[in-house]
Image 1 (cartoon, each protein chain N blue to C red):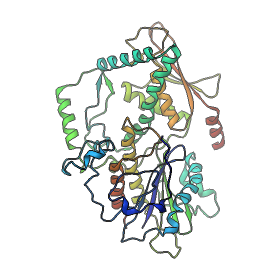
Image 2: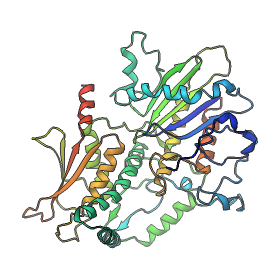
Image 3: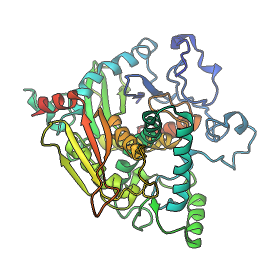
Image 4: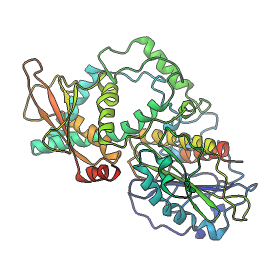
Length: 170
Length: 290
């Protein structure tokens, strides 16, 4: 499934963006492609709401619908991976927070365009986020990298795409 | 950050960017191209990017991404004497560039701040990894009193050789991530125990909440390791550690102000107290959750 992935810094600026598409999968339709950053940024409010909750998984339980925004299979103990945080028509948005409160957000699109919700494989998506988190920590270890600056390294880009191929290509 | 004009992504022809050239915020997200060559022209680091195209693909240039975050992958201990020389130079450079005592302390504070930002992510990430993952030897203090032994050097060499792209990443050894610290007390305990153990090989001597003010906490160190060779002057060199603490708390979204005060006692001549004063919005956020 095509995905749009972005790391959002503490100043709400994109640190890194990528689209994971390939000819086998559907590409983002051109009119939707432009909307991706907006959809993603719209979900940041929910992410920042969950950021300071002690149990972010159960946080949406206060809603009467039993947490329709949340996927239920995300692990209960950790509060880094937040699972599915938002949806927008056929698109699902998942979120992850690093310890320095960098926001890792991804828009998942389904292959079919019939408007059904996208199934999220929480285990694979979580592993993907953790691996990208490790790459981000490595970036931060570079003394020439400043916090909240765009990550322009081609090696980082390549590694993230390899991870996407490994975990997200279904 | 240099400001460049951000062009709409429709204006960019994707064929104009063959291969991966890294993220550019003026271009926006790039698609994964099917004919993307996996190993050519992308093996170099960001700085040596121009030269890396000429280098053969079998020899990847050293890059931060090829290093392992595993604490046992290389010998990372620095002898205290070597460190003392470096710190002395840091202080004297700050002294030469400054006009007042507070400016010296501010410069030391700034140098520590960037260390703190990085320690928060690194130490939390490392403590998420299951204990048995990778080689199993207990991590010691960063500034260790023992000098490096030859066997340690050999270990470090092996570590750097083995840390190629084929090595499993540290993230694969994570069963579940350590929780993010959400409360001021939790993050201060992280500094009190984890950070202090990493830097100085022991936990700090005490963590006290101020009885007078709600937003003040005190970290007490009876024998600060970094400034033990600096006799008492009117310049407080422990502002370097203040910077580290403030960097950690700031990037964890606990904006605060950290100062250090010398409190000599009969047994502990160099005893210092780090006073952490949180900004009011931290307490407001706490009140909202309760």
